[in-house]
Length: 333
Ligand code: KG4
Image 1 (cartoon, rainbow, N blue to C red):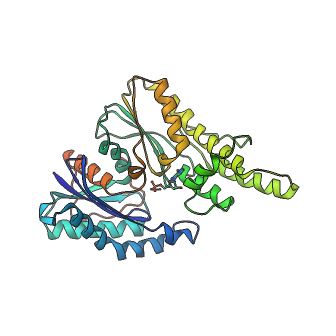
Image 2 (tube, rainbow, N blue to C red; image 1 turned 30 degrees about the horizontal axis):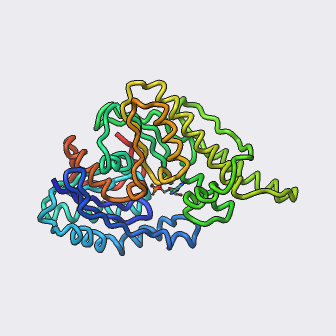
Image 3 (spheres, rainbow, N blue to C red; image 1 turned 120 degrees about the horizontal axis):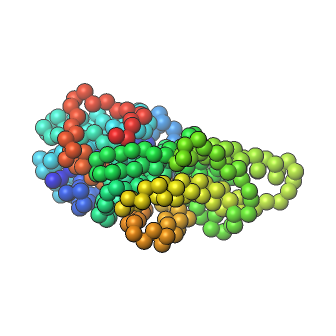
């Protein structure tokens, strides 16, 4: 089965052709980072306009690179949500147009399911599975008893972890996107500063807004009192506190779910080098569980993961018709 995947939920316009959930025949990504960098973050209105300019070119290129035409495609998979509504609309309209002009099934995909199934591009997973989703818009712990069922057992009570990385980077004047910059800077420092430890209600829930404010207050206090401080140490202290928040909850979830056979990570923050080390540490502690962190190319937004998720959703009998609309806060189910 050959699926054309289309993704436009945030600041990447992407299209990919994937065969049988494994073989990526093409994956084209037009990133808008250079434009949004100037504003210190994604400007939704600007992002939607650039998607409009790029979407046809990106789709055409994906088909061309795969050496195929729409006639060879068996289904069109599209990110329906969650994401920025104006951005999602562009992809949804493009996918609808293609699907109905070429009489192909249209498969709606949840962006987060895409990040989970991105792992299938590089490994086989076993169920029950525990997935840690960490991106600029989401921080979730998802339990999957089987390939088609998602149970969100933990989520952020406020900011997503990527959002916290980006905001802290802004406080430190590191530029956008902040995640990779803090990741790099933290390697030169040590976690010597004590920052507020997040407090949460749910057993596996996360919180990052207090930590983010803690960093801002720390900088203000140092500036006010004229004390010396080290930016790399602060980056390292923030990163360690944020990741400990995540991994404390992951450890609890693994302890409470001894039946889990695979643990996977998805979303842009899974590109983080310290997070990868922490997954490695967990893997050594739980040799009976299969751990997977996808390669960097699969971590950030792309359409190959949407094509894989589309085929899985299709096998589960999911289809959309001409009434499909984008949903900015689409639930994972
Ligand atoms: O999944 P993604 O590409 O977009 C969505 O949010 O859907 O994730 C982008 C986020 C940004 O917040 C970015 O700062 C963060 O992922 N990120 C990182 C790293 N690379 C990207 N955060 C920490 N360390 C990194 N190396």
